[in-house]
Structures are given as structure tokens and as C-alpha cells.
Length: 327
Image 1 (tube, rainbow, N blue to C red):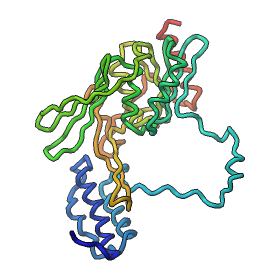
Image 2: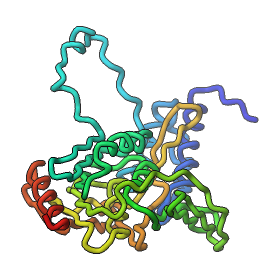
Image 3: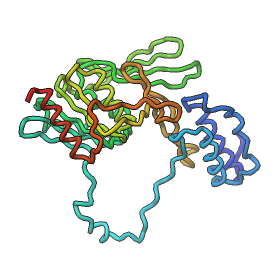
Image 4: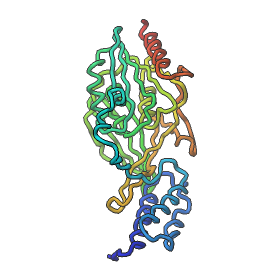
């Protein structure tokens, strides 16, 4: 093993590790172009870790992918912020909860999920649904939900669906494209992986969520910031839903973010990079695109509320839900 001692050696090792990771994992190989030409492009200029990271940023920018980037460490809280200043904040300064449920007087449910960027969203939804499980129908508010963890969105779909294909993820493989499909049935949530040569692996089985809202009329509120894992939930509910029992209400078409990212820690924490490593397909096989970088196929609402600032689409959503129920 070669000993790395100088600052320039360490910098070059860091840059090359980033180059290797992206080259091996970035999904759209057509956008890698002449990736090999980047390997030693800055060898003479790199004199340490800082310069390595600057040149790595230049290399990543060549992909023209908004989502593949170096993840910066969060800025430390300023020491000038005193404990008394922090404690002086009122309850009004607190952000709204990520999950909220309300049952109306006429037994209609309202469920808001503002993000999937937490590992415990499924559990938070499970607790919230205790308030509305017996409702006649539900308004699901996914406005401003820009996504997060795909697994949390898929997990939450179990509350709404008894069975069906939830989504298909495609990943790079040395021999082509590997596909992983996620299903749900009456007793299990499971995934099936298929290799490029058609070999199907043994299913991976998971505990499913109880389908407490399955079969009930649902109105989904969306807007231009409902993206990624949020879009997975929308399109899966629509394509697996019963005719006449699922409706989308919103101010405009969603961004069409049918790609997923993963974070990789480089050389024991010298850098962290986020890489677009997969794309996902709707249950019907459609691809929503990559927010227009190469293609965009966003989700358009059935009922448009052009000037929605919050209450407007909510009112329309409940009106439409009552129509579905004949109220």
C-alpha cells in the first residue's frame, strides 16, 4: 500500500475518490460523457484538500445535474446567540408539525404530510391516523411536500392501499439496468429485484401498515412544490385507486422529479457527496422525468385552483370530497 503523506497527495486521493464514486454510481451514463478525462485533470494544481474539493465541484458541475453535488457541513450555531435569546422565542415561532390530522364535524378526515425527509414519518402518520381512521373520506394535503426518503412514502402508502404495485426503481448495474419493484398485498409489503439478464431475486418481505383508509374516497392536494417522494405517493394513489374515488386538486403541475439520490461519505468523512443514483417509474411504467433537466412529465391536478394560498384549495378539496360522498 502506498503511504500518503503530503498535503497534495491527500488532496489528489480525495479528488480521485469522488471521481470514482460518481463514475460508478451516477445513473444517467450518457451525461458522464468523457468521465475518464477528469481523473487526472487537476493533478498538478491540487495542493491540498481545499483545492481538491474546489476542483471536484467543477467536475460535478460538468454533469449538469442539479442534484449531484457536494454536501456542505451545516454551519455551526453562532456563539453569539445566547440561551436567553433562544428561550425568548414564542410558540408562534415554532414550525407547524410535519404530520397533522383533523376530523371534521361531518366525519371527514384531513391529513397533512409536509415532508418525507424523516425516518419516523410512517410512525407519525400512524399516530395521526388514530384521529381519523373512522372517517368517511379523507383530504390528503401534500402541498409543499418536496419529498425526502422514498421508503417513507412507500411505507405510508400502506395506510391507503390494500394491494398493488407501488413503484419501480431502476439502478445502474455492471451489466445494465437493475430493477427493484415494490408491492403491497393484504399481508405484506415486499420488493422484488430483477437483474439485467432477467434473473429475479428472492423477494424481500417487510411488515405492512394497516390499510385503515383503503377504499375510502380521497382528495389529494398538490402544488408545484409537491415533488419526488411526494409525487410517488400522489401517482401511486391515483393509479391504484378506484375510479371515481380519487381526485387531485391543486394550483399547478408538479415538477416531475422521477430521480433519486444517495449520499456517500468519502475517505472517512473528508467529504460527502449526493449523487443521482436511480430513477423511479410510476405503477403504470411512466417516468416523470428529472425536473426538466432532460425531460419533464409532471402530475397535473384534475381540478385547478389557480390562486391557492392555502385555504382556497383546502375548501375546494372538501367540497369535492363531499360530492364524491353524495353529501
